Image 1 (spheres, rainbow, N blue to C red):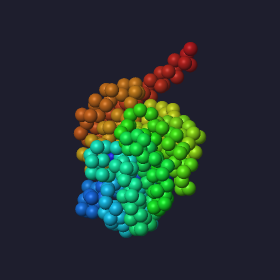
Image 2 (cartoon, helix red, strand yellow):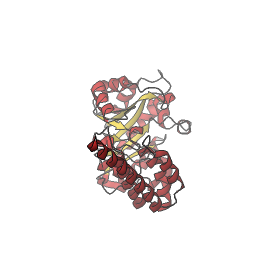
Image 3 (cartoon, one colour):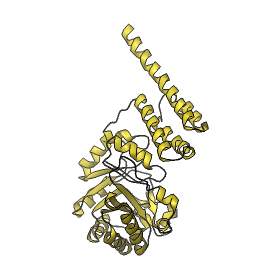
Image 4 (cartoon, rainbow, N blue to C red):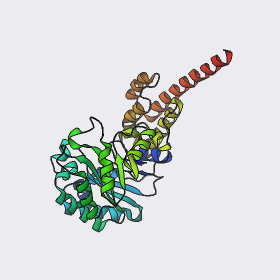
Length: 316
């Protein structure tokens, strides 16, 4: 299974955690080719390689074929043989991306999309992949024909999200679209959409015949999915949150790490006993050590509850 690029989520620390749990390939947050061409330090910081990554996998977005090619060439030079996949985003449904002609807007401009793939392919040392959606609004794009066009232009792999851009993340992903694309092309196809548990990934592969599964929202607070685990104890969740906290502080300045970890810890302990009070405490914490203390206390409370149940069962 593959970790999908997610803005504000798939930084080096989170990718490190997911890879330790068995993630086969992890993508950085998607980056703008305009920002790359302006040599934005903040953008390049999104592409820092985690210590346990053999290769860096990048997703770029933009609309000008020449600019896309130039940015891809710079990244290829920057990472050399450490560059894994260069993914081209043709699936982002966010209005601010679409209005610029980027992301899923490319689905209705197959000629420009094909030229982008060709330009990136010219300069990229690694694999070139395309992330697409089932359509733009619905019925306006033939996903099979679009995927074949991307393959003919040089794409080595295609990822398909089973929703149209208009759906955003609502409704149910249509896995049949993934199956149709798989049957239409001769390159690997990766399925995406509504994979929140390992059992979902198995079902997707069985129903679509896809070569691999791309996990996005299903990985938030749940790197355990890459270890093929659907049932995870509260103690393992807390231990993983602690590990993630330490890694985030290692890769980033403490102030930024503290802010970043608030949402990650909320995801780790969602729906767990006492999680509401813990989230409130963590959202007021200012330092890594404060958060660590809160998590260790939470772990101790849960260990005591577990010990109590064991003793009670023995007496009974």
